Amino acid sequence: MPSKVKDQYVNLVTQRVVLSAPNTLTFQRINFGTNLFDKYGLVIHRLEYDVGRTTMDELVADTDVLQMGLCTSDELTAVQIEDPDCIDACNILAVADGVAANFTLIQLPISRDFCDFPGKGIIVSPSGIYFGVDSAGFVGVADCVIRVYFTLVALKDSEFIELLQTRRGFS
Image (cartoon, rainbow, N blue to C red):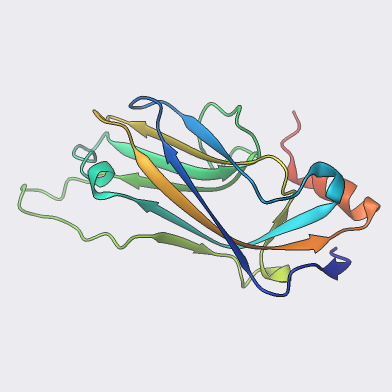
């Protein structure tokens, strides 16, 4: 689909979301330095989700969950992979392993690598990309970070229209 490559090297953008209140879905728009009329495709090569120790300490019961995701809308009611406006989602949950002395080590950041896909990534429109975070069972607010590794590709008019039609969750 891409007509020519704009970027020679991978770019990186980092976005942080602190929930507005505990267990409240919160979105933050990610700016990739383009506008809708530029007709670029955003090729996402890799995502890294990271949370701090204070946020991880909120996961204490089987009902506690932290949901994070990259979305094409900030009007979702949940960050769930089955939603067509959710590009990628990551859930971290508490699992009781038995007695309190048992624990599991979690390696952060949690990475999603799309470089083995055709085109070396997932292509989306760079306009209207959001990092969404939600929690359940938290007493405090979650503080999360996403790192997006990407390149921009110039698209022909017809390619750009096709991209908008295929990646948006029209209902």
